[in-house]
Length: 172
Picture (cartoon, rainbow, N blue to C red):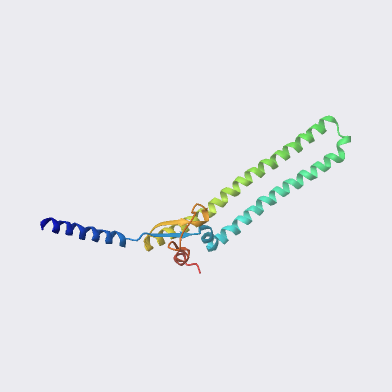
């Protein structure tokens, strides 16, 4: 009789613990972070600032190219009448100008990339904080970024938290 009671007690405890573990539901969510970033108001301001900066760099390069073109045409027009020393000096000057333009282009590209990172990082940090806050408040254990292409599948049981994050950020 004692053995039957012990077995029954173990059985009841096992069922109760299974019920407790079965009731624990893990929440998974997903978000398209690129879509989120594209609708954030700060993104438009950063894009405008980037475009203006790029136009300044492009304008400077265009001025350099125009000056090079003008000097090259002057050189070609008078090349036959120049002494070898002057001809060599003008060719060296043209080569130097061309080298400066190439260096400027490379430096401008790096500078433009650095500026973009500088402008976008605070926006990315703000979005990441909002996602973290929504995940914590909603009890999510994982949030997958569907824009990265890493998530191969997500079911309807996974909740799209984009609307929650938009609300958190005050975006309509």
